[in-house]
Length: 209
Image 1 (cartoon, rainbow, N blue to C red):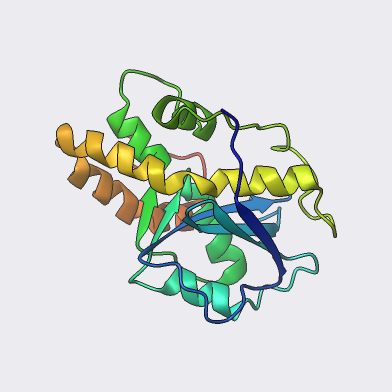
Image 2 (cartoon, one colour):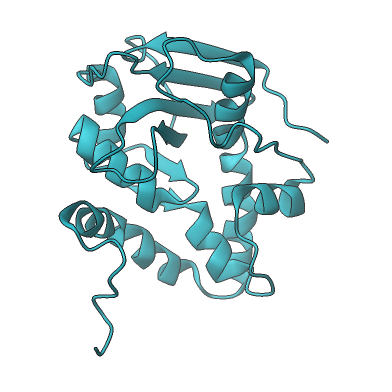
């Protein structure tokens, strides 16, 4: 089964005022590349689930985005990511906000699905939900003034199922007694993002040598 959104809205520069995402929001980002200090933020995707997604585009590199910043800084709303390490760093770098609290489904997958080494969103989504995600637009020009329909569909798919994936993984983590370990990893993510932004992206600071 291929992923399909019920509704995708594209906004320029910020979310509309007064939006309510409940107690958790799925989040993803797209950038010009994979180096936060070099490759600027181009797009933020958010979803409360239910097949509805909002994309916030930054075509002119204007990151004032007061409504989006308020959402990310809201301690009452859990931000769900897949590979939060990158997204949290991008949001800190370009929006100036420390996301919290955070739930990372990739970390959860690594702790829960120890029977496999395949923890990409496509793999996790296929196994846990039976949904096939297309990754054809993974490498494309996200800084374009106008996004293509394929880019919009791709970007939305990266957040539409994170709530369901979180719930499935959390059941396994609780069963295996690893929920608290996962929480500790999630709590460390803002610090890990600071290390990435500060020049320690590939260093294991806990290593002996």
